[in-house]
Amino acid sequence: MAKVLSDRTKAARLPLLPRHWGVADIPDQTGKTAVVTGANSGLGLRTAEALAAKGAHVLMACRNELKAATALEQVSAAATGPKPEVLPLDLADLSSVRRAADHLDARDNAIDILVNNAGVMALPRNIRTAEGFDAQFGTNHLGHYALTGLLLPALLRATAPRVVTVSSVAAWGGFINWSDPNWRVLYVRWLAYSQSKLANLLFTAELDRRARAHGTNLTAVAAHPGLSATHLYDSAAERGLSGALAAVQQRALVAMAQSDRMGALPQLYAATMPNLPGNAYLGPGLETFGYPRRTLRNPLAFSRTQARALWRLSETLTDIRYPWPDWP
Image (spheres, rainbow, N blue to C red):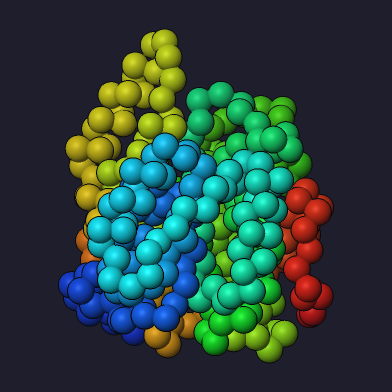
């Protein structure tokens, strides 16, 4: 309890953000390159549009090529700088992650912003990635852990690289199922989703700690969209009576949700505003909706022990190791 109160006290002292910060307040991004995962729809698409409109060269990392082609037209129409591009990427397949990273690294260009946005939510069955991981843990966390690590050389070529990882209010109910992180024994889809979103926060904390400990200029931050109307709810669909009940719940949630343009604001603030401290966490002002502000998180996300353990587990599962030893 003392730890929770301490976290709340810290949050109360956080610097205030502009009350109604929006896309018009994004600083000029001319000359910067941004990679946005899941940019074919929802929050990713809105993020790509906003960055391109401010002059950034946006690389849209997408799994669905057909949807990506349509999204590319929208982002191109908004762009004021270099023409955006589509980068094929399936975070549920580490060979796809490696191909995408190799393609970007071969360009020998810097990546200024990486927005780890893509994700799946509350999948109805025990769906697996290409490597056999739980699809939610594998896509939402392990895929982004791998992508960030493989893109590290390109990120470190930038003057002030920033990695933004998108979490969720569901992280509040999350815990890492250490005995069965891929939910092979008992699959509970909402617990698996919450675990993946807590993992996003633990990853951000450890990434930022290691980046600073090794003297780099990389800053890792996190954001969440609150309750926003996106296609993420579609991934929770299923058939039968339980599916019908889930569909009713989803329609109710979408009816109460804010737009994806509003939901994208916290991650846009996290990606673009200068002087943001490492491991900062942005979310809607009223937690589920509103303009962005610094926000609270599950106290487990502050656990260095859990963050280090998750990092080691991620190394083992993906066979990808960052060039940063784990200093005390």
